[in-house]
Image (cartoon, rainbow, N blue to C red):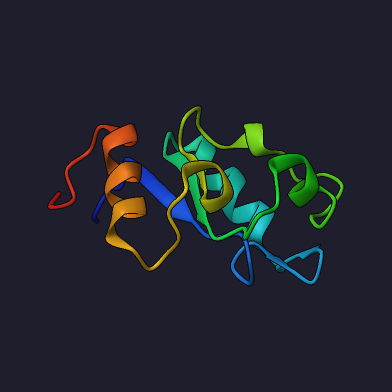
Length: 100
């Protein structure tokens, strides 16, 4: 079985859709976290601040559920997907190799 040390998710239509959790998303996040996998986010957020974005997410969505420094919102880092730069920044912050 292949092991992963870090997994990055997108918010929109991956974890959350139309302000609600995608079915099973919280269970998957909990299982990964409890098995020691570091969790991150890479998401295009337009010009919304983190606080403004929070208003569009489920009430129990917490950015601090993800590992420190591994939440990359385009509105904060100034790079949007699919630009390679946001992914390179993510792996740099995670301290991992993209080839592993």
